[in-house]
Structure formats: C-alpha cells, structure tokens
Image (cartoon, rainbow, N blue to C red; front, side, top):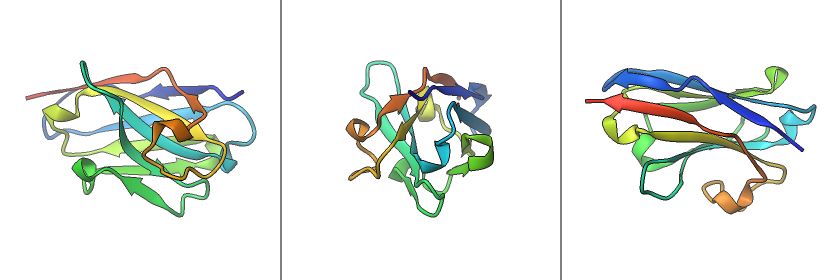
Length: 125
C-alpha cells in the first residue's frame, strides 16, 4: 500500500507560478513511475505530466508544454510539478498518482495504482 500526499496548491493570479509536491510513503518510491493529473469542475480527469522511475523520461500534455516541469527526488520520496505562466484554464484539482509497472500509456488513468487526495489550484484572471 502506498499513500500519496499532495501539497502546494492555492490561489494565484494569471501569469504566476506554483510548485506542487507529492510525497509518497514506503521505501520503494524510486521504483514507481509518477504522474500528475487534474480535474476541473464538470470535466473528466485529464493527464498533465508524468515521469519515469529514474527521472530519465518525462511526458507532458500539449497544453502545459513549456510552462510546467515535472521532476522527482527519490531520496525524499517526492515528485514535483513546477507550474509557470499559469492560466485560468489551469484551474482544477491536481492529483498525483503512481504506477508500480511502466505504464503502456503514461497519460492513461487506468495504468496508475495509487492516487493522492488532490490539491486545489485556482488561477484568477
């Protein structure tokens, strides 16, 4: 069993920045592939970014490329999402997730085994 706890969400003006953190319990964090997803009111949960267990590969949805950066610190059991140039359409609850095996599709929610409780990000115009 893995527990994921997100933090770092909040209210920010358009053009601002936030850094989300997700800390995992357990001693096998370095073996997990990690992802960030978001869900806006009335919409389905969507993929934002993902990172392989080693950090050597990263993946982003097109709408955040060049603005968001995913990274991880395996010594701290933590994955980060640095969000710059935020837009009102980035407003959502952000969830981190982990996959014990390499996802066939990093953007697919079905490939992730554990999820955090989410953290709210609100971007005002």
